[in-house]
Image (cartoon, rainbow, N blue to C red; front, top):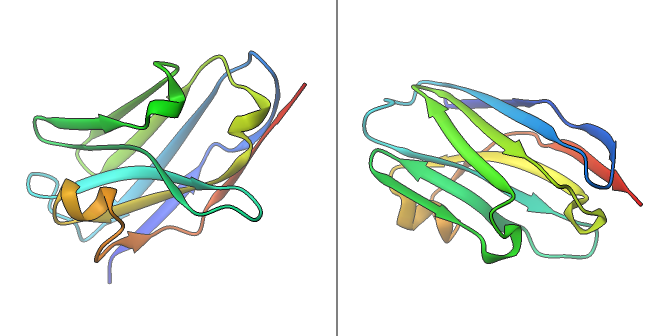
Length: 119
């Protein structure tokens, strides 16, 4: 069974930083795509960033403030200059292609970790 476990969420002041991490099991690191999504109350779940070998994609809304990185099956998201609008539950996700992952097709999900940014 594919398992994704997130960590690193918390509460910070606007302008602060957080680093999220995700560990994945049973996913060949050389031939899959992993990424981060987020969801606020009453909003649709949206993609933040996805990455695979030689491929990365970021949501326009993060405006160069976030950086995704991967070390085999460990995925990280460095979040800088956080804003209250970034408050959401952040989910680690995986699929067999970044096209599928970005469009939330045939995707495995973690349980989510809460990020809260106060003014």
